[in-house]
Image (cartoon, rainbow, N blue to C red; front, side, top):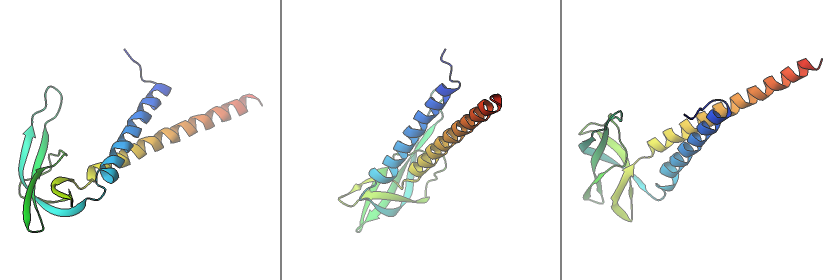
Length: 141
């Protein structure tokens, strides 16, 4: 069994934080570069049943109009909070309006979570170092 205590736990958390930051940056800034915002209506929600301890996921199909033409596409995000008939913001590629994805909200959440985890790791590491310095200073008096 692998033990994740002390420095190993911090390294593991830091790796997860970096992955979350990278995924968030990709989803929010790189994947969406050049895409245009529009409103879409959720017309269907596909429920994908999780197996074992995995939870179910929900993939919305949206309908939106660009230059008078209606497009339909599945979003690459999953949430149980979506409802059929709900209006949401999506991004589409102006060179290929059939290419659609979510508005990047999930990417911002990943960035925030990654940043909070990294900040916590840095804060606790600095506090530990200060405690070690204080202890070694007090011991030499």
